[in-house]
Length: 110
Length: 116
Image 1 (tube, rainbow over the protein chains, first blue to last red):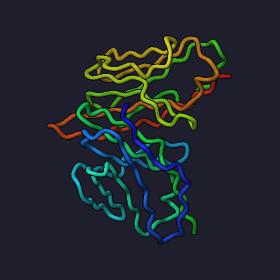
Image 2: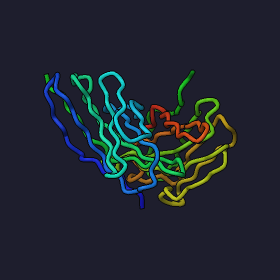
Image 3: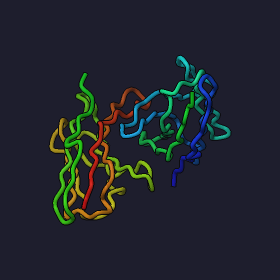
Image 4: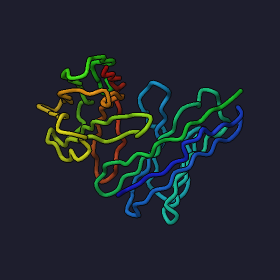
């Protein structure tokens, strides 16, 4: 069974700090990796995706992928209170159907 | 472009009643997914369709649950009879496949279902 593991948190960081969210996955054949943000009472929205080993940057967000270690992370620089949400990691392989983690709750306090 | 549209946004009904949730995917998307989200179990995939055909319904919890996609722009998820443990937020998502690369899913706003 394909598994995607995330620490449920909450992860609490001060405003302006770097928030680091981590995700591990069990299927070595996984090819695509997504990070979704979900505000309380709202639907998941895509914020980052990565396909290749290494880093991918988009504004304040950086996704990092290490396929050898089966590990993907999301860094949020200059964290803002508006970043407070649950972050879902999703991983997909040959079937293209993603498996979602349970999510990590992030709290950015002023 | 309009996103994935779900209705109703909220549904409160009594145990034993039939519940029908509706979804309109993004035009041109050829995959449609139904998810259920609870605090206890997170986001669970119930069923997904490709070009209106159900591909995998192994996540449907019981025979009380059924889903249809009569055309490319409409899908329903039905619970009959409903039970209090079905209370959850139900999301519909759609996805477009392109050349070999996996595209992300786009989620609707969800239906918050409460069974009394």
